[in-house]
Image (tube, rainbow, N blue to C red; front, side, top):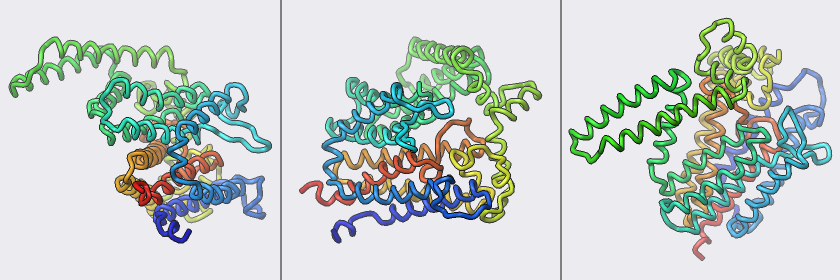
Length: 426
């Protein structure tokens, strides 16, 4: 037991503990009403979160006690169980705030999508380590796509598009494991085309694409590269078709609230009165969050001293918008410290992943780092107004038992695998 404790990466555990503790302090500040009482009071959000933290400590002990090979040996079964838990929501799920994403267990609720991320990471690591080759074969790509997309497709209709979006993080893992950079470039240009279509329209996207392809043809010919006009025409047709589909989906498939969010984010609405109405409704959370963070200045207003936090200006401030509490009460110094802690944890996980002796452990480690990074980047970007509003919590910070337990499972399975790396070849 002593030898095992020496092998565990205590630096990652320290970062985890700091993030959880600082997160709890900000939940306490965001929901404290000034009335006395125990911090374990189950009628308060901070009391419930502290109970979840205590449960997480016991969960950590269990996760580190399980034989490391168990996670690899039963990865497929764990993944199938997670899919069944997501399917079961359509029959037994509880509707909360318009989403059927929880099971009601006694007086508590459990969100299976928070645990499905770890299950998918295990299944992906299992499959990639079994094929033991670069990701080039089409059949392998199809199977990998199914492993990643099946949970997302089950989560979207709950509806919970934010949780489904997180599965895009696995493409970072695939790139590390040999996925051709072309796929990432396609994804990158798809985002550019999506944004450009909303900003300028399909006709201007067509004209701009034709101009860029013409310049590319001229440049490649001068470099004596093999390229034909037919190839460029095919690219132009694909680009225009994608742009047209974006325009069609935006206007005919998206709900009005989704269109309003993009209109606010990209400033698509020309009418200042309409734009102001959107800001007060769809963009209200982000506007108040930006104001709260900006009011914190360099040093912040102090713990429990945030006037906007105490005034409940920011809706859902203890969940998705918890970072605004950090900004108001701890200022630029506090937000920088939180960003630094997350960055250190992510970089540490990448370092640990690279030193693994087995492909399974390395791939799972990169999955953990990618998921945490994706959650962190999207949540902070949303809170400060750089990205449109999506329901993605801040790992270890946002209130919620399922979220905290899910990220604890995700992280400590990898720390167990890392502690066992010396025995992987034995």
